[in-house]
Image (tube, rainbow, N blue to C red; front, side, top):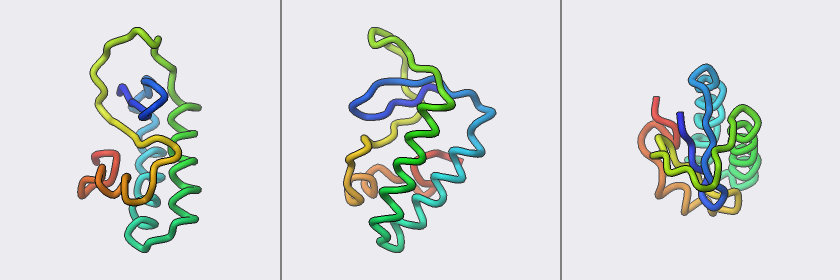
Amino acid sequence: MIVRIMGEGQVEVGDVHLAELNKLDDELLAEMESGDEEGFRRTLGALLGAVRRLGSPLPDDALEPSELILPAPDASLDEVREMLSDDGLIPG
């Protein structure tokens, strides 16, 4: 899966890692729904860190379509709320 982190670029993440990313996405969704700003910041950082750690960065000149777009690390709770679907940031 090709993942774009806004403001950073694209990373290719293997499907084998989706369960780990979905767990963090579920935590992020729960923190957003409860208005837990501190938890939201922590979990957003963990989610983006996991994508960076588990994935392989694509070259800056690569023009691959992103299957998933994640917010920048400094995105506000309201900005991320606008990006969410019923499934969170990560479908499934």
